[in-house]
Image (cartoon, rainbow, N blue to C red):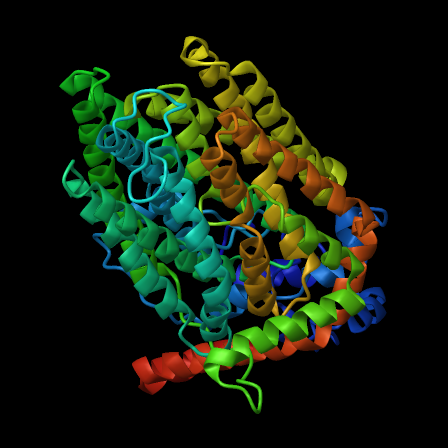
Length: 589
């Protein structure tokens, strides 16, 4: 009966409104229940006694669903937008592309376009991020050739630096620029209706710069290094726009856990296929340890990533991600350029004063290995290329082991976050990641230990696939609802404040002839530091309760604004009776 749509579903939920299948459905208008404000926990609790007796039969009194039912009934922003029925629909002959990326709500079965778009964009983003491994390896080997270096302890320089310092130097520069400019990007996303436009434009450049790297060769490697830096910056902006949609998907931490786990699995499977294609093309061409072979592998990898980005990122932002209204207006006395910095300052003060748990979590993010503009990637690629003498194909094989671990870790994260809550899961994941990286810096003594890299790459993958979903779920459940974009901007900005520090320290150590293995172990030290800063956060359950109490009124305003915005967009596109019926449906919701 549940699979029947429309009237039959509403009729079922009228008689059992607290059934888990009905908790996320707005059936208030249909059933004439006195719960006229679905965003008020007090109202929901007061009227729960008026619900039919079958409610207690469907959900036991001690059920976790029953305890959190009022909170779960709140409609997220994406759910409100979906209720309005507006959006751009792909032609029917193209919609089959969406099938592998559909992630329905596990409780209601609702299929949000933004959830499908998030999954599809994740698959497109994976190769865009991964291609830097192969392009970076080729650039390092070309730089070493130009400098006349044959060993890892070579002191010759090119363009003012050792070849082994080039990737980490550009990473440091991009990290500092990002820390300065990211608040402006956040201001545009927050105070204007151009959130989707930011995602479209940044995605275009992130994919386009990858396309340019198809033509990497011995004569233009330094220019391609600059292009790679620009691509990293465009990718960061695109990630900011994408993550602004994540808290919109649901207000329930279990459902968010379901979404993020499914997104990560699809991303890692996409990367697995991508890396497999890179290896297959290399093996078909014939592998050797020459520089020309490494450069050709980088060209192939860039071409495959470019095609993937055009298809998946392009489709997601053309047909699936929808416009959002401004969440807030530019504050009086500020401009769009200064509002981001002003907002970050004010939001930081609010966090520091009112949200102890979020304050310490932000401190932890300063040292997170995911922070910064590809910091871990640049350090790992430099270490494997210069010290372990890896070719691009060997790095691709190590990446394949990493991807397998990522999928296992992501699935494990979904289970462990439910068992011990996202905070403890994040702590354990970071600890395991730091320990595995620290141990690898001791085991990797030279090219003769090359085979050990593949086993450790699998360990890194498991810990990363475990840590990052836990981190995202934790953040989404700890921020006040209705202010997601503001806090997502703070989240991204916090990661950039010191994100450049590991690469800067690595570069300084390398330029002063310190053993490069200490540079790899540096990442493990940052992981342990991040764990230490989570210890004063306190109870996760208490933190969620505080956020829920503070979020009610703001969330109501944002949901109403989103419904009004989407209704207006729908009225502009349709006329007559169809438009009137759509408006009536939206008002009911």
